[in-house]
Image 1 (tube, helix red, strand yellow):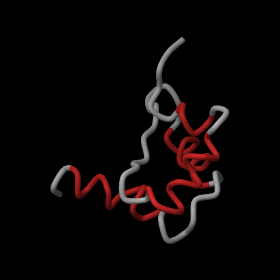
Image 2 (spheres, one colour):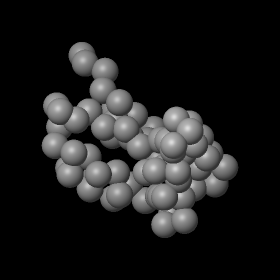
Image 3 (cartoon, one colour):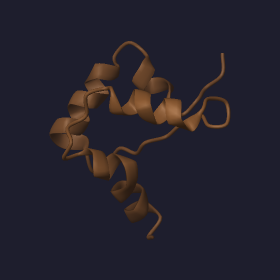
Image 4 (cartoon, helix red, strand yellow):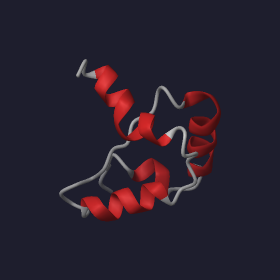
Length: 71
């Protein structure tokens, strides 16, 4: 089995990650993908379909990583 960064959101229990991000963990999670093994557009589309609140998406897709890497 290969470990890929986006595997956690596509496995049993992933609803707990989404719920946590929407409630109290939104400042601590990052979007990650298994690009080049999976098309980036497919990973993004699947991520957006998981049910994250619109208010938390900018943090997950950009802001948290920018803060982490001091960009």
